Image 1 (spheres, rainbow over the protein chains, first blue to last red):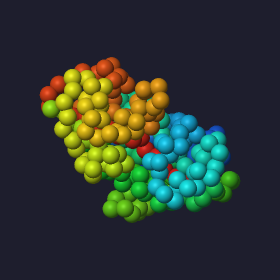
Image 2 (image 1 turned 60 degrees about the vertical axis):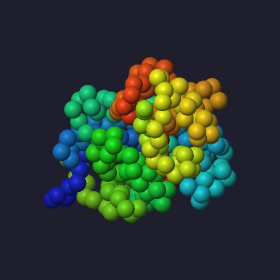
Image 3 (image 1 turned 135 degrees about the vertical axis):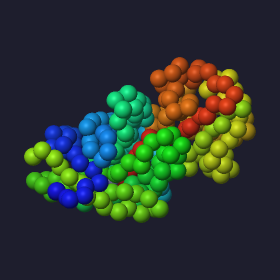
Image 4 (image 1 turned 135 degrees about the horizontal axis):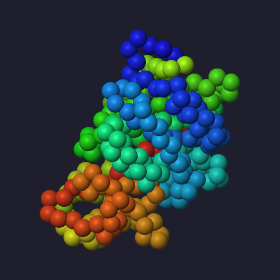
Length: 176
Length: 91
Ligand SMILES: [Zn+2]
């Protein structure tokens, strides 16, 4: 996973922490944030996936197809196929990122049984975030997906999401 | 006047508007006024205990009100309030 011109460089320790986070949360999806400077990750924030606490009305923030899938599941099963970051923890992380003089580099989440590429729901909600990100003074983050589909070989890929489409960008893991 | 930025999923309540102007000397008062013009918005922001829903951030000029004085956070003319649902995704 080395590249001449990586869009983001992640230290080996944080790389492993993300995989550990995904494995601990499985079969639920995990989620979190990476921050740093100039395309290098220096800080890792685990954020709680609060999906199972969402009420039926709150689930309506998901698009039609995903909403129907979620409604078929018990609340405790819903986090297997989706995630919702805890807003307070996300704001706390953003506060810490600002205090350290870092910038948000990426959001990450896991796919426990599907490949490491964004779903339609991932893209729709990332675009929703794009619509107000700039006004909040946040740089455009990458979206990283950790796939545990192959249990022995977790796969981590990064995407830039814009114009309702996703493009994979190279990642580097440093310090192996 | 306070400028309130409305996220995409809530624009169904504001008739498609992405920004609305409203008065109010605190966040809570501003949301009450907003609800007079755009019924339904309060229920989307607050849970049954009257707390801001756990997946929503309300920022006053880039600071989350949870780290200010919550719904009592004072507002002044020209302040910008952003309602931002936290990142989510699915599969
Ligand atoms: Zn996903």
